Amino acid sequence: MLEYKAARAGRRFAKVNRFAPTSQTCSACGRTDGPKPLNVRSWTCPCGATHDRDVNAAINVLAQGRWDNSNACGAQVRPASVPAPRRETGIRPSATRCSTRNAEGIPALQGRENVNGRTW
Image 1 (tube, rainbow, N blue to C red):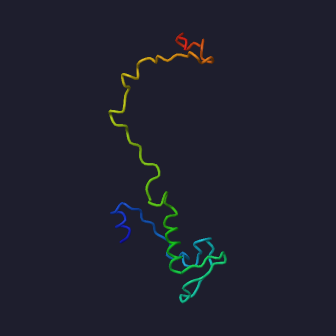
Image 2 (image 1 turned 90 degrees about the vertical axis):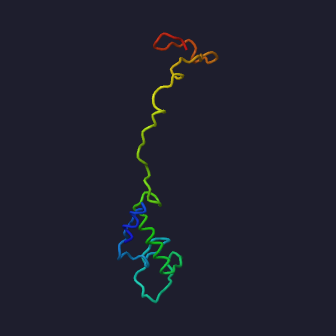
Image 3 (image 1 turned 135 degrees about the horizontal axis):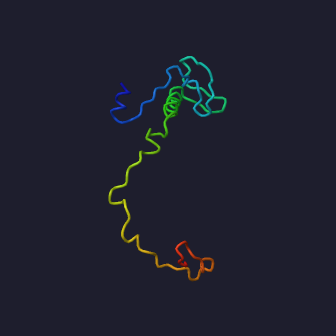
């Protein structure tokens, strides 16, 4: 049901392995601490982080769901190319005029000739 609702809303749906040890894995360091009985509601990892069993599992499920996405929202990193609007294509008449700039005051460019024989 979630998969079709996500598709209808334009979202990405990711399945997480049902048997992944999400409540046994520390969300801070990634260490798997091993199975615990259901009456253990909180535990402390050797790295020093204290976890509520359900909150820790929720953090790990979210991280696994986002793992293969390009970004957090699931959007494309590089959007498809879009052709330029017609008004932006072509050459403007003002751009075809020759430049009136010269090389006065620039010693490295004075006396140089281009391929057409003009000096800069």
